[in-house]
Length: 150
Image (cartoon, rainbow, N blue to C red; front, side, top):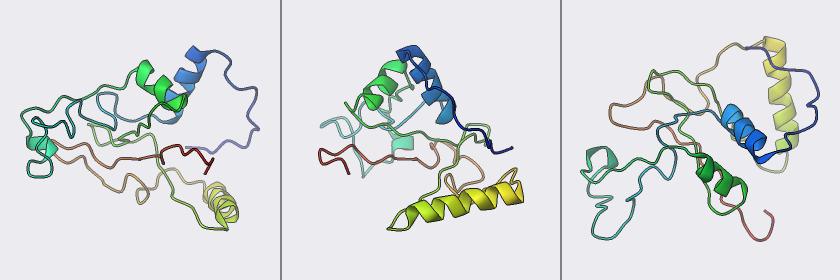
C-alpha cells in the first residue's frame, strides 16, 4: 500500500458523495457498527454485563446504514467501526496520538511510513490477527462531540 503524496483536491459536494467518502475512508464491517446492538442496555432485555453480547438471545445487530452515517456526521450521535472483517482482513488502521506534541508525532509517524514504504503493520488498532468467534473485534470509537469544541 502506497501512501499518497498528493494534496487532496476539492472535497465532496453532495450528501451522497460525503457518505461514500466516509464509507471508503472508514471501511470496516458492514454488518455491524457501534453501538452494535439495537437492544444494548434496554431494561428488561439486555443483561449486560452478566451475559456477554455474543451469548445474548436478544442480540439484534445494527447494520451500517447511510442514515446512521449521516446522523454521525451531523453530530446527532456517535458511531464507531469494527475494522477487522469476518475474513480476518482489515482496510483501516487507527493510531492514537495525543498530548501536546501530537502534531509533531503525527508528522513523524507519516514520515516513517513513507520512508519505510510500509505495506502492512498489525500492531495498531485493530490489534488482533483474527476475529474472535461470535465477537466483533476491536472497536475504533471516536470521541463523542462536545459543546465546547474539544
